Length: 174
Image (tube, rainbow, N blue to C red):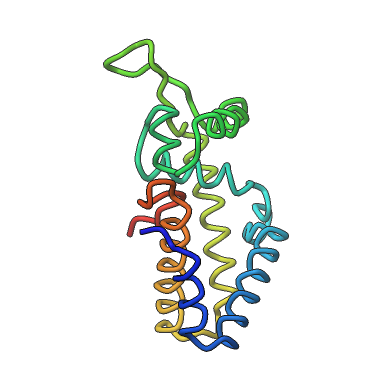
């Protein structure tokens, strides 16, 4: 359901304005720091894969081979953006273009063995970074943060989707 200006006003005054101010500020700081560091990981793999590449490779890994239109729809972005972002991944051998098994004219994008290996290196490095950043958190705190961040991302995704449905990146499969 779209948010009207009246709803926005009610929503911002319904909560603690100081808490909402702190929340928006912390989200802005997080976005800046995440972009500065790309939360790339640690060691040799640190900052070695940009966000777009990581998200595309991750989606192909989770959902399997698919065409550009399907990949774009699943990520909530347009086909021209996917085409532009996939080109260097194909050039570097991380993604393969193959013919659709049922319609040889259609192109299917698939993670290559090199792409699978590279993605796992980056995931491992990023998991290590998350472990380091939250090393002094209780397991329940990590779980609560993950749950709330997933919920927050879902709300952002739903708000940004043109039809009011899910758009953008879906939470990772468990």
